[in-house]
Length: 85
Image (cartoon, rainbow, N blue to C red):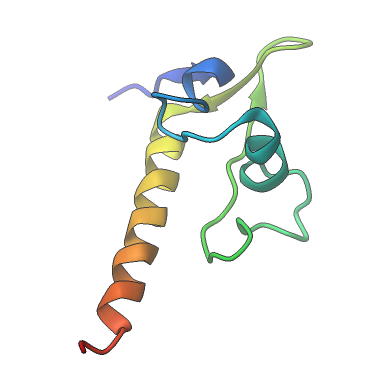
């Protein structure tokens, strides 16, 4: 099974897997510093981008999907840990 490369316009923004704006995406979602590998407020690792050209960053589709699933899992785990009232 091959892995598809996704351009940034396919990753973030309304209707995409990560529905946040450009600023939020680059400040909180994209890995820029190995010393700060987690999305703020979570234990989910930030998305690593690859460059396929001088100004062409991409991400691997399976990593984008894994990031969304990790956020979902953290949400579900937090809900399960709260006592029922």
